[in-house]
Image 1 (tube, rainbow, N blue to C red):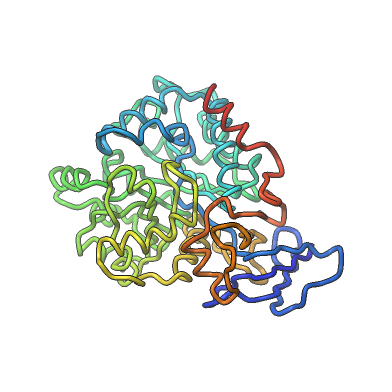
Image 2 (cartoon, rainbow, N blue to C red):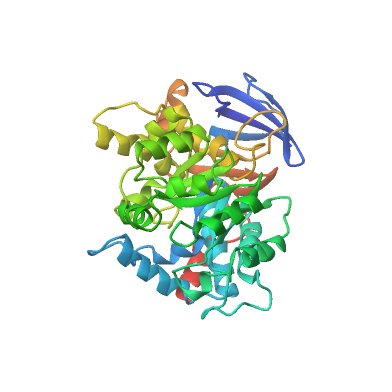
Length: 430
């Protein structure tokens, strides 16, 4: 298949005009910029700005059912968590599949081609295991396949607290269960330490040893109370505890990383971790604003995620890193548009264990998202300003075409496999 992109971002400061992309199988075979619009009917023309596929590095798909139900009124992260527990206690594999499929479909429509599903719904309601201990995880993997999005299932070890269905008996039982999950061409398996609240230090080390070389993610310092309890119990911050467990490395992703000490920043940056910020959820839950610039300066990378699905809009997550930091610091332009775009593409792909994705270049995965420049948000955009215009003004609704592994997921703004809105209505009213 040969694609001709009116404009394409190839990683530089500006979009390149007239980019011809040759796709063979699930890979990009060649990329040639500055090619006039072809007359060949066999060439697929993509008007607008084409980007590498967008990575959603942190998702809890089932929490899409909370949208609109938990956002109004008073409360805190901790009261929201009780509402989430109630929802989590109701889902069986069929319901999980339907809700995840529809949510991943919404992600595809928003331009997301790769998702990291931070998965901790393991057992049946009440805590008994299913006949297949991975029934819920397999439902999520099947949902991603039908929604035509690439996935890394970040199977979370959860041993203490929460509700019974989250928990494995111990870290060895968690590892034995996850060992039975098979990878597929568009699905990989990684690990997660849910949090230092849910996994003790010795067990965290077991998870880190299992993960060796695979993606390893953890919720880190999302709330001040988490830090206070960790210090009281262990005399260490969550980051310090994870460092002691030998979890920190270039394959580790700290999710949220909102309330960090200077020492935490140095530890994370020195280990070359990725920090995944989820600004729309962090706003919704009153978490705070993470120290993105300080983390970058210390040596960390950034990625973005939709987390609780308060909204699903990767452009909003990316630009919020800059815009929220402006509110906190009073300084503009700390994160250039191209850096934000890298966080939403190549950096997110790398954090999810797909280092061959998130770029438009020969040999990379043929994952691509095209944004229309004709809608009200972007009409009149000049080619030389297309990248910052899309980063700071585009919305999920501006996405027109999405390709994953050389296969279309979205064409002309419609999902090619199913009616996503109808799927959401059924899943949310079941």
